[in-house]
Image 1 (cartoon, helix red, strand yellow):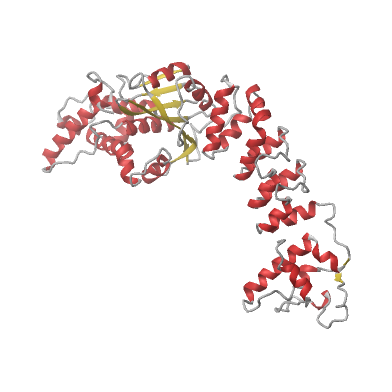
Image 2 (image 1 turned 90 degrees about the horizontal axis):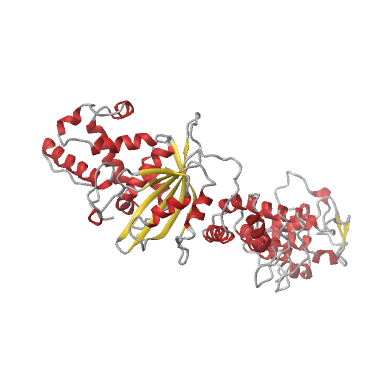
Length: 491
């Protein structure tokens, strides 16, 4: 945001550092004999500074970030003083060698991770999610940036002053993580960062502040700083959480995956967080929050468990589905106007793992929806034949008699096989308008079939006629009635 909205900056503020870096670029241009283009943003590189603060915390070197800022801020303005290492800490001497390299490296990093540069890279479609792709472009391959959640992409999901402390407490469940914040007011926008340390403290950073960053255990204090950062009409519109992971075997500062802690937040705030997660189709945070041994979590499952279950099934999130079923959410809960059960949803999208899980927790395969279809019929209509087979085997009538009568051909299991083979023959022999043959091993396996009026037909062959070396389909010629079954709308 514009520096002229604030008093004179000194020390670690981005305004003071901007002046120092700009002065360096002017002097180095004289030495190089050509004017350097200034890649820094005179209106503020708050996105870049916030990202670098989070990065240095993520690699467990927060002090090095302040050392870099301090060195730049204290520069005496003499370009020749940067050719040595005077005033540099031991860590900076090892990393950069001299002041020139430190200045160049900082300018490069800062401009790269600033908002305007990101917009150029993403073709002016920059969002908070692009942080990951942006980081990967210049990563040293030693660390990976992952997204835990990214909210506030939809209208009506702004976090207000009363809700913010609770949202920070919820984010506190993820240690060694970075809350990336975008705040806006009548005087402009600003980027802030809150790093949640391994010890559970909030390290708050505002690049416009005199000392830059502060540590506290108070979510209320951080909220106050955030919402007063650019005026009393400040609104929070971006709220994302990221984690840096080490790609090396020896890991000092990996994100803490310990059991979730108790949450001292309101039921309203927890529900809003879950709804924002579900709206963003981010189910891992929901799983973590609902896993809490917490009265609010239990209440939310009791009230909204059916809705959570349907959304988890629809989007294929196995872990959340299992958690909700373990918490006694009804596997047969009907949630939408079509009277769909979770099993019907899984059948439609063909998620075999979730369908199996639902059956384990008592899902009823015989329930029908508003259109009169059960889960097996829905699976068949959408070509999800693995689900059809699963539901067939789960049925009490799944066992097949040694001898099939003509009427048995109308059962779902045999009809499904007919339909599959019909499709196969349509692909392999496009000239056939109807499937007139069936692979006998697909239909009969080791069984026999009885079709009235066809017993003596020379086209009927036994299973013993099938050999692995026979490349042509061993087939059973069917009459027009059975062909009608194969092409009926019931499929």
